[in-house]
Length: 195
Image (tube, rainbow, N blue to C red; front, side, top):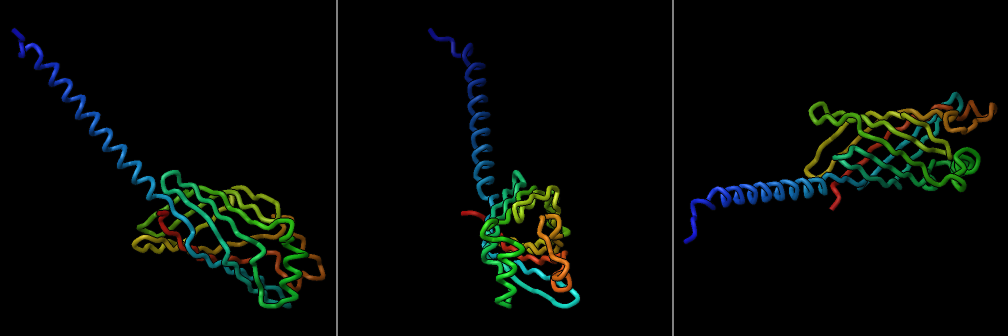
């Protein structure tokens, strides 16, 4: 005859292991599903730049921007197609592409960074990383912005300066009165959760 009392502790042990494994499986499945929703991509971007020099003010914009951000790893990647950079004056536009930015040779500007701060309460975001422009990479480039949160989207606005000499973009002395070596950047990037 089978002694069932002798096997009860073992069955209880197996039940505990089974429930522990089931709990672990549910937890990791939910974490994995949650991680997938933590990936953001650029939906729309508007980047405006401004050069204020004694003889001329140059304003332009870029809208061809792509990028991704992972809210778990905090990594951010942004690519800007420089051929789409535009200023209203046609001749100035040509000089900018051919003489300064050399967009045929350096068609893409990239920023690869990490979110150092993402504070929904104060609505502040800080990102630090490598900015590559005109074939030159500036390390530890910091961007601070503000977060505007929607239901499934985040609008991030930021203002910062780019110094042309940091990226080996030379401005001839004759042109210095028309082009400032410090370019002011205003960006609005709408991020959305990746489907």
